[in-house]
Length: 302
Image (tube, rainbow, N blue to C red; front, top):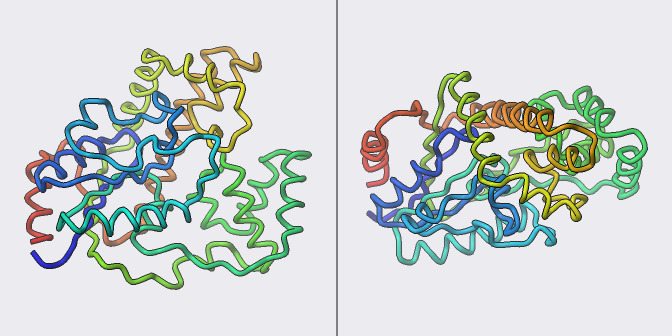
């Protein structure tokens, strides 16, 4: 085996990426890089479905709870850190595994980040002011009008992503999506994508059960501890922001939990939209024996 290979396991939330990634890593006696941006933060464990202690012992993981919610950490930071880590780990492994549902972060590592034109900083300040005065919904509607393609896949509940797209659209007169994937960077490894898929109803059922399990495991207590810092960007995350509304006495607990499930289902739908555009992904149904998927990967990387 001469070439270095990165096996990337993708798919929507709650579909079983973590366990499959571990099976593949154990087969190749290698290590895992997480590309799930929600799992980067030390203070967020229950609500981000961080791998269990047993899972973390089963295969060495990187980029799991490695920074604080107090730190600014962008996709560009992740690309830089992940590339350094890949260079280091490929010194001793021919195959590495990356697991994650954050499409933008996966793309940053595999293809490099897109380059966007500079725009007047005033535009971002105006957008922040509009967010404060008129709310996120108005900005979402403008994004839908100016760039329906990006609107269909972006996390619409993340004001930073919405503002970034509008900043480019307003500043250039072109949709944000028009500047994406113009120049794919050359990488020193080959990428093999493995996607996990399932019928929508099954995915939604898994999501609902996962949320119920998180509540049993102490998600509300975790949200209570983080509540004083709820304005931080990292905490503008499904599972926390809904419980903050309960803790703010805006909603009752039943409504908050119901909205966590609903927003997680929407998030899964956007993940599917993102990944389905990638023709390089080899899709397998959830429930496919790991041995079958490992046999496929073995053929591709040897």
